Length: 303
Image 1 (cartoon, helix red, strand yellow):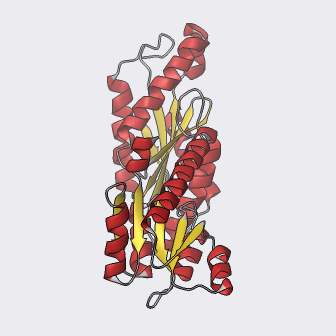
Image 2: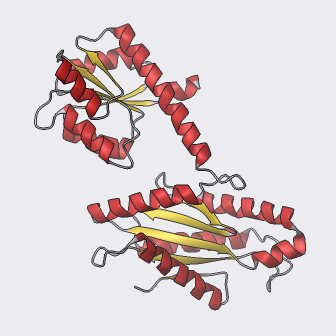
């Protein structure tokens, strides 16, 4: 846990350079620290960095710390980042404002170094523990991938984010071919091993941090690919198909004697907004087409 705490990312936000430097000097040797000089820069940094804790000034230029915190708590991806306000405002109303927008704590300027270090450590420790418990609740017990519940939450969030920002979002549904026959011929223990192996192969082909792989149910898996168009999604599907085929996993009940996967691919189009169910239906129809065409291949959904 100590190693994970030390590797945590802390974002320091203050429009006065001296203040940023003082706080960085206090905590910089214990955490990975980043700085932002405005609310707008802070939000951009949060989207790209997703820090573990934010130390946020209340009174800044065009965008106050209260506005920044309010925005963070409204965002599905960023809302779990704890915010500690650092303020020179000492009125009861100011304290109430800090709590009302979702802060976990606040400190008065000038900061006491010992108090700052202890507060930062306490809230980062709590954040890491909460993240760990959340991950356990969202993991599939057999394969170690994310489960259907986590996928459903993340899928809805990423789809809305893609629609807001005007970028593509792609989805792969992956199905192990003739899996019932695999179980019938080799037994359910071998089937469980097969699911774990294929899960690992799918995971190994997804290289970007934002790519999400989950077990969708039975022998079906899903891969969510943010900021990926149809060409990129087709490339990932083919890489995955090849990865499984090249392993030459024995499947005595399959026509070719080796295990294969079929993949349905769907991609959002910004000129034709779709719902989450639309995209899943498109990927599922493409998967069915891949099965009908002979299995061991991918098909891109027609829109």
